[in-house]
Each structure stands twice: as C-alpha cells, then as structure tokens.
Amino acid sequence: MPQNETAENQEFGKIAEKLASLEERLSALEEKVLSGSHKQALMKSIEDAGFSGGETVSVDSITIESNILEYGLSWIGIVVLLFGIGFLMMFIQKQTNSFLSSAIGYLAVAGVYTLSRYLKNSHDHLAYMLNIGTHLLLFYVTLRLFFFTDTPLIHFKEGVVLLLLIALGFQLYRSVLLKSELLAAIGIFLVQATSAFSDSTHESLPLLTIAAGTSVWLFYRYGWWRQMIFSIITIYLSHILWLMGNPVMGHPVGGLSSPQFNLLYLFSYGILFSLAPLVKQDERFKANVFTSSVMVNGIFFFLALLLEVLLFYMKSYSGIFAIVFITCLAYSIFLKFRTERVFDSAFYAIFSFLALSAAVYGFTGLPGAYFFLALQSVLVVSWALWFRSQFIVVVNTILFVGLLLVYMVSGAYLDSVNFTFAISAFITARLINWQKMRLELKTEMFRKTYLVCLFFIFAFALYKAVPPNYVTPAWTGAAILYFILSLVLKNTNYRWMAIIMLLVTAVYLFVVDLGHMEVGYRVIAFLFLAVVLFGTSLYFTKFLRKKKTQSSEE
Image 1 (cartoon, rainbow, N blue to C red):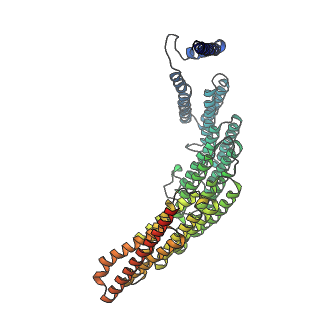
Image 2 (image 1 turned 120 degrees about the vertical axis):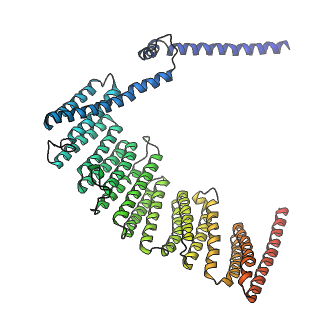
Image 3 (image 1 turned 90 degrees about the horizontal axis):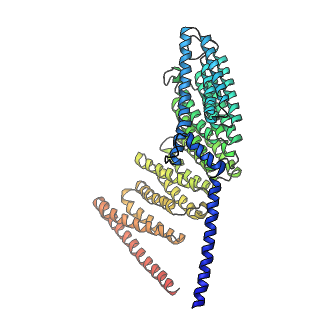
C-alpha cells in the first residue's frame, strides 16, 4: 500500500507541474497581446471615444456608438447637404438666371468631390459617402438643365438625356474602380430614373434594357448579386410605371392608348436576367443567390406580362403565352445540361407549363380547357421524372388540386373532362409510385393526394355519366375495379378505396335509391351489391388468413 500511495502522489505531482506550466504560458501570452502597440491601440480607441480610464465601458456599447456616429450621421449629413445645395440652386435661379444656378451647382459638385478626396486617408467612410453625394449631385444639376424648371438652360431634351447618360457612365466606371456595389446600384437606378424623365417609349424602354444588361454584366464580372436583385425589381416596376402612363411626368394613370411594341422590351429584360444562372458559382456568392434571382425575375416578369395582357392583349394573349412556353421550356432543358443546380431548370419548366395553361385557356376557353389542363398533369410529372425534381411534383400537385376544385365549383361539367381528371390522377399516382426513389420523395403524401382526387372524381364521373338507376351498380363496379388493382399492383391503398366505395354505395342505396327506384331495379341493385360484399369479404378473409399464416411460419 505505501508503494501505491507513493506512485499516486508522484502522478499528481506531475499533473500539478503541467498545470502550473500551462498557466504561466497563458499569462505570458495575455501579457504579450495586451502589451506594447496592441495595448496602446486599444487604450487610444477608448480615449478617442471620450471615455476616461476610471469608467467601465463595454466594447459593444463603444462599437454601437461608433457606428452611429460614423455611418448613420454621415448618411443623414449627405442627404441634408444634397437638399441644401438643391434649394440653393432654386433660390439663385429665382433671383438671377438658370446659367448662374447651374454654374453654382457644378461648382458644388467640384467642391464635394474635392472634400471627399481630402478626407480619403483620414475618414474613409465619410469620404466614400461624399463620393456618392458627388454623383447624386452631378445627376441632379445636369437634370435641371432641362427638366423640372420653368426656364431650362438647354432646350433640347435629348441633349440633356445624353449628358445624364455620360454622367451615369462615369459613375458606373467609378464604381468599378472603387469596387463599390452600392455606387453601381445607385447608378443603374438613376438610369431607370432617366428613362422615366425622357418620357418617350423608344427612349425610355431601351434605357431600361441597357440598365438590365449592365446589371447582369456587373453580376457576371464582379459577382455583385445584391445590385442585380435590386435592379430586377426596380426595372420591372419601371416598366409597369410606363404601362400605367408614366405618372412621374404628370400623365394620368392609364393614359397609355397603344402598346407601342413595348412587349419586345419586356421580353428583353426577362431574357437578360435569365442569363444569371449561367454565371459560374464561386466563393463570391452562394447557390441561393441564383435561386433568388430566378424567382424574383419570374415573379416580376409575370406581373408585368399580366398587366400587359389586361391592357392590350385580352383577345390575343394565347400566342404570347405560347411563345413564353416554348422559350422557357427550351431554356429549362438547356439549364439542365448546363448547370448542376436542379432548382434553376425546374423553375423555368414550371413557368413554361404555367404559360402553356394560359395559352390553352386562351385557345379553347372553358370548360373545354379543363380537358387539356387535366392531361397536362401527366406531362408535368413525366418532366419531373426526367429532371429529378421534387419541386415540380409539389407545384403540380397544388395546381392539379386547385384546378379540380375550381372545376367542381364551376358547375359546367363534361363527361369527357370528368373521366380525364380521373385518368390523369391515376396515371400521375402510378408515375410517382413507380419513380419515387428517382424523385427523392420521402413521403407518400403526394401520391395519396392524387388517389384521393381519383376516388372522388371517378365516383362523380360515374354519377354524372350513367342514368340514376344505374349509379349503384356503377359504383359497385368501381369498387370491384379498385379491388382488382389492389391485387394486381399489390397495393393496399386501392383496397381501402374499394372498401370505402362499397360503404358509400351502400349508404347511397339505402338513402337515395330506395326512394325512387322501381322494384325490379331495386332487387337487382340490392342483390348485386350483396353478392359483391359477401364475395369480397370471403376472399379477403381467406387472403388475410393465408398471409398471417405465412408470416407466423417465417
């Protein structure tokens, strides 16, 4: 025992020595970090913030106050400065003339730019904000050479628009030199503002196209995805503003009388922004950037196109949506082989099928369009199998159920449409079950949704197709068909559908048929249903017993 205790004491002694050595190293490391220039820099930053050594200050509070003072106030200061110079120009113009007002404005631009250069080394953020203010002020001063003034200095609108574009081109050039995404986003937005001020279809809309192309190029070249998302939204909104009659320039809302070929420009924005998924993904941004750009582009393109159709193409929109269908479907195929991201190609495929639905509706009208729209479900799911896209299946399920509900509520029923819905639901359910591993579906929720639709629409189709006296035999036949499918496909879902159909048939027989059927039809219906019920009960009792015996033997 003494020898064991001695050994243990020696081990504890070694551990204590190691802990002491580790503590000495940590203390030395802390002293090194907080000594010399590191410590002086930390203390200087605290003193510069206005705190004495006796005060207890948290680093978080210092950071928050520093951000407010450096960033927040600089933003407010730039806005106040711009408004102040603008009011000064208006005051000078009223007191003197437009030439002196513009001269003062350009001198102010030079002064703000000089100040930004002077503060570049000592106050970089304030210098950056002043640089942004320089470009905004340059745009405003140039704008007032013709626009928003009673006495324009230049009476040629196109000349001022050209000067504005030169100024904005210089701004975009500076944004590249400074690597400033914010400055680029402001420049592209000001191009859109210039398009509204020009107030001419074939001047305004080409400028929006140029803005879209520039935005996509900046994304491709520098990975500036935030400005592109912002530009997608604002460019489509600018086009919608034009469709409303350009109220920015004082025109009444809805004052546009003809389309003036603006649809070509709308398609050009959509095509340009659709090039974003072709940009190679790297460390500059994540994959969800592409997802966001594709979705935002699709949503706002659809909104603008919808307004376009409502205003000008209510009688001829089928061809437009047919073009969208062909273009988006072809592009979805291209993206499938060009990129590894499944969502991009799947979204364009879904968008193309939505356009196809609109085109079909335009060509055939209701209720005939329901026939083709029901069949479209099979086509979409087949496309999802090829694309390996669960997203397409989910969207198609929602659209199919919604379409079926709209059809049932409409009251305009056709036997061909009723059975087409049933056949489409059955085929779609089989396709999903057949390739559920390919689609990576972790649940049977989608397939069961189609089976529920099949159960109700098939029963409804038979109810509408056969005379009232034959509804019970027809539904009984449907139950037999479900039983056969359960045996052939070895699927219990169809067995439950058969059982429920038999129960529904029995209720219908007692509640409805007894009241109006003749005695002969009544006897046939009751006996036929009884035979089916007894036969089904005997067969499946024997089947389940056999299955249970096999399970127990194994």
